[in-house]
Image (cartoon, rainbow, N blue to C red; front, side, top):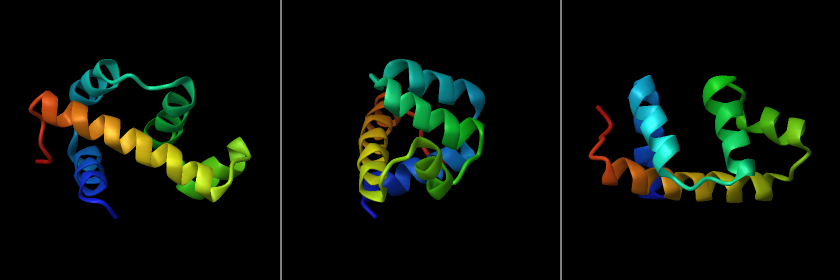
Length: 84
């Protein structure tokens, strides 16, 4: 796993709602990415469940997750948030 994804995963475990909203608002997510974020962070679905629900391949889901992690990492560092 790339270092950026590790930072994002750690941050997601320790973030508060205000930080989460700031990152979502300051990043330019596509409709597809926002759907994935909602299913993962709000609904608590697993990677596998999201792929099944959305009828997506594992490769496509990985691509979406990588794009989200890159955008979130940029926003997290830009806003000065760090994994507590």
